[in-house]
Image 1: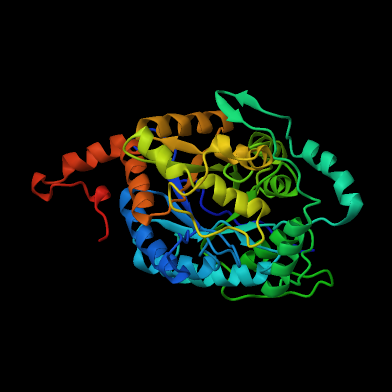
Image 2 (image 1 turned 30 degrees about the vertical axis):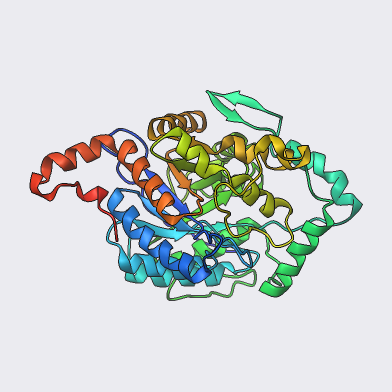
Length: 423
């Protein structure tokens, strides 16, 4: 256990609200690898996209940690965050999240403390707990209890937001279980995390310079002590992560794009547990899968591979497949019922459409969850379609801000700075 006072971080993690009055908007980038491309291409595109997001007015860009998935190039959040911080001017950079099953909290804190030393005031360290595959009959019997605790009560509508039921439990899927176990062996994920509270206390104690182990021995990490980063907790259920984030007064990111059935309950559990600590008041970011195009029809066309991609994550032998090209996936109604049931929660809650439709649905998500900030993620086969999606969304989400920028910009420039793109 540690003994320390929690140092306050950014008083308002979202920064000032846009002139439009809407909450800040941020991006979670997975560095999607499309069919026919390489992971090297995906990483380079991710860095280029971050430059665009910086100019478009997005508040932060986070990188996920995924290993050995053919369709995801984001495996090293700290490395990507450092590269992007060096190539952007304003946008915050960070992890969404570093997984404490593969990376120790000390190493994560030192990585992001190093980045923050070079880019103070622009770094976020998001920590999360990775899924460990259950085994045996006992786990199968426990599945209903876990579903009940997660708040999965079946499809419902909350403040206009569709909240699906949880997908069918796959705890007895031997192929999926063996794939996860095999990946853990290759990744070398041999550490056994202690309680999540203790992991976070370690990070906070090292930053405060007051950490002592259970024997009273003090420890110091120079890159972490006094580091100018914000600590975040990512949560997909109203369980330990949400509770501990609240107890420590940390900001939380709730994953509507991963576990939409549990998001409302996750946020409620966090708010119920919240005590002033690192922050004086709760701060909630809610994530969403988003795809914007110039027309609803075009957006729906671009969205057709998404079901195949989610299916590969939840049941495939290799994890997330390289993102398919539109027009190569079977129609929804032609899919076996078991496939539809396994991915329907994510397909039905993905926010797809023209800018007006998407903005309206994002406002519904914000209202239903009470989010202080929204975090959008976009998967497409063509990187230009993703870039266009982020551009259209920014143009309509920050409409009032762009109008102010345009009024202050000489007409000869022809385009507001926030809409410029990197060739």
